[in-house]
Image 1: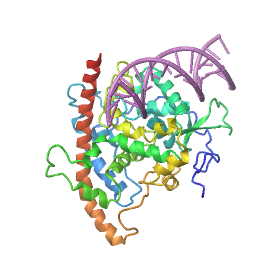
Image 2 (image 1 turned 90 degrees about the vertical axis):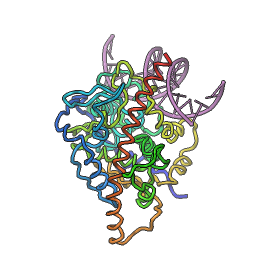
Image 3 (image 1 turned 120 degrees about the vertical axis):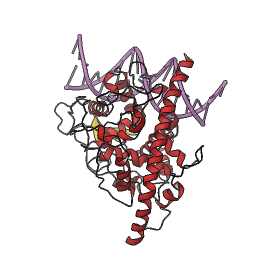
Image 4 (image 1 turned 90 degrees about the horizontal axis):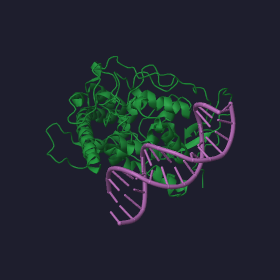
Length: 383
DNA sequence: CCATAACTAAACATGG
DNA sequence: CCCATGTTTAGTTATG
């Protein structure tokens, strides 16, 4: 039996032992990002990036602007009942991220050059990308630590290597669990994408693309769009952000990207997030569940790698943060294809993806809104 | 109603 | 002693 486990022993699974190079990050100095927000409120960005990222291997997306920020930009401002307050200046609205702590941590770690971070930098990353937490009670840090400790997806690595002010360890993602995290991320990000497999309640509009066809021919499933989008989000944001070198931090917390509630004090409790829950249920099955149930890792990994193999996945992560082309998996299409064939498909996909992206975003937005208000009402109800 | 997952809170230990 | 970090436990909430 060949080694399936690319253990951490050698260090973080990325071959390089994590050093604490970027250990001292600017903590939470970042909530400022006014620039260019106006221009971000269109879907072009996503269309283009979607296409660039996912049409047959265009690894270098050219981010025109911040990603998901704009996803709901179109209607973000007119938040119905309980939508988060928008900073008139276009600053980040401090809305609660729709990601579980696990995913937040995961993203933070993966975005670091070394694929490992001390808790402090994880805090930093989160604060940076989710200004929501800057106003939140400090309990979230506890949650982060709790998650690091408890969640087997994360591994503690000795920061033995010359970190002067080293207190605590570095944390990295267990490569074996990475597929699960990715999967979680997929499912987490755009619940609305599920509309792609289940027929919409209302008859598809004329603009609705033949999604199944599209997605199939694309050789990844609809859920991949989620991950893809999320990754894109992480990848193509201007100023590739890790706590160490973040110029223009990506703001995942933008109302448009992920909107939940925006009042940290009032509603800091993640558990009340309907949006999150609805999606993280499934995602969590690939995360914590495999922590707690004590199922042996190789099994869970193997199970998780039905779709894509963890080792293969590792290729996808380059040194500079999340290079996430989609995981290679047994493709329904025969690969390699001829260039011509690829090009043809690409052209088709360009069209379809554009539409699909639009629909997806629309759905995502609607869903977020509805979930948001639903959550509030239910919570109220409870009380 | 139950199981599960995510989150929160708190206590406690350890080390700088 | 303080603080950051790390672990553990218990409780809450939401969902399937």
